[in-house]
Amino acid sequence: MVELRKRPAPPPAPAPKAKKAATTKTKGKKDVAEKEEKPPASNPADDPTGGIPEGAGGVSNTAEITTADEAKETAAKVEAEAVKGVSKKAAKGDKAEPPKTGDSIELESFGGEVETNDGDKVTLAMLVGDSKAGVVLFTYPKASTPGCTTQVCLFRDSYEPLTGTGLSIYGLSTDTPKSNTTFKTKQELPYPLLCDPKATLIQAIGFKKAPKGTTRGVFVVDKSGKVLAIEAGGPKATVDIVKAVVKEMGGDPESEGIEKAAERAEAEEE
Image (tube, rainbow, N blue to C red; front, side, top):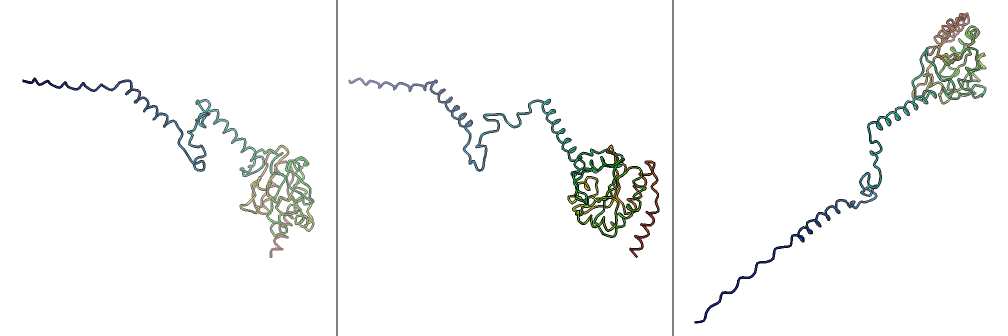
């Protein structure tokens, strides 16, 4: 008999090397990490930063303030700059709150530059400097109109008593030097008329109307820059305000000229 031999079983397949598997896994993680770190492609027109995250290759905008102390210091600087800006506006009269009676103003830069009806460039500081005790500015809307004529004549007829304590009187409007010169000559005014076409001084004392125009009123300031009076009112009321200031200064503001001017104005209206 032929003896049948059993075929030997095939040897088992070798197990995969652990090192190779680990290397493959690590490599996979490395590829993912590199993919995440690589900036995404971008269109410069849509993304000016080129897809680079804030702070990459430099210091981010928010990294400048790193501590609470630095944050406080930065806030203090911002507040100081804001206060400084408001102070400058107040000095120039640019969109700032007008002064009130009893306030003190910085004369040197208050209200900017204006022009007399004779064409001389002046500032409030110059006018106050040339005065003995201070300046009266009365504002009027338009030269040679009825109400404004009454007002300038009231100040004309009371000129001597109102200036008896050293105050200098000026009319103030947005009219041209030519218009104000005609007005002054016709009404025989003993005081100059100031021309403020940009209304910088008128705005500084709070008598500029929006969007344009002038409120009738009066502003009185002494040599030190203290505001003695600032108030809107009609032709006679503006004179009465100055009379009260003169009286407080020890002068005699009474004058028959005021009553005569008022009577003449009423007659002209009839």
